[in-house]
Length: 359
Ligand SMILES: [Zn+2]
Image (cartoon, rainbow, N blue to C red):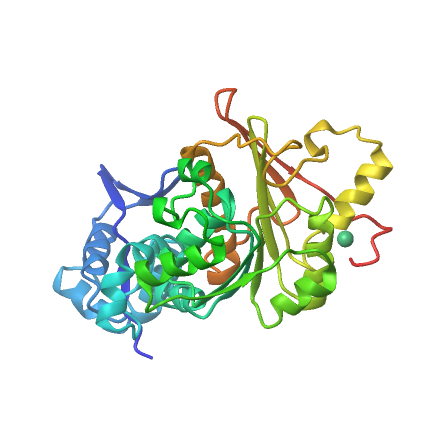
């Protein structure tokens, strides 16, 4: 395939004898440019219209002699620092480019000459997600997945829409009150973007490993957005080892959001965490047992923004698994966001436990 390197739309700062590339907010690349050749090359790459083999001739027109080997090395170095992508739409049709423009431009952050944003999108479009729960977190995750163009989402939930849900479950409206959430969720997805996401809804309660395995057969990812039974995380953990797919989960306890994921065979698992807690006797408060969505007593303690934040963190982690843009950040890593204390965040990795029969 004919690869045309193109400079990403990043900030390029020119200084005497130096060029600074600002690829990301916290990432700057400094390049010596005493003769102006780097600036000339960056200008050509910004146009995104020449292959590596065609670039030396264009540089010669601008007064710089560069061999094809030197050009390949320079382009390779720029690709290594993440400022290049492959020009063109990589085979996506016009309707997909329109509909997913902002998703694709976000993926550009992670794209390079070997990995295109279109490939990341195709990963999402071929995804098959088992979503356990369509409440405060689950309905928000569903909305994000549909917006991202996930190929298929199977929603499992046993609740009906209640008026109090309307404070923070934006997939539902007044007309849905009294309906099973799975039906309302399916209707919402069809109305919102029926052509890219098929939602299969299952009005059922999750109670054992076999049930989760049966629901998840063929899925590429499981999102756990339910808080019962009490050991639901351990059940989902075991089921995901059987299915051979990762799962992502999160929740809210008092004023603390938390989220984490498990990649079976790659990261430490939820049973490892349980065994670590037993070994440590609860010595690490940041890893203390926490309920999934709501604390005991089922208090509806979450505003719309809180539920959206939580769903966003979980959906982003799901997206990392499904698209491959970047490594999952929460695989075997307990992330918290303290909403009541200046938005302090923590990330605490937990190790594999040698006694874990799964890992
Ligand atoms: Zn384990």
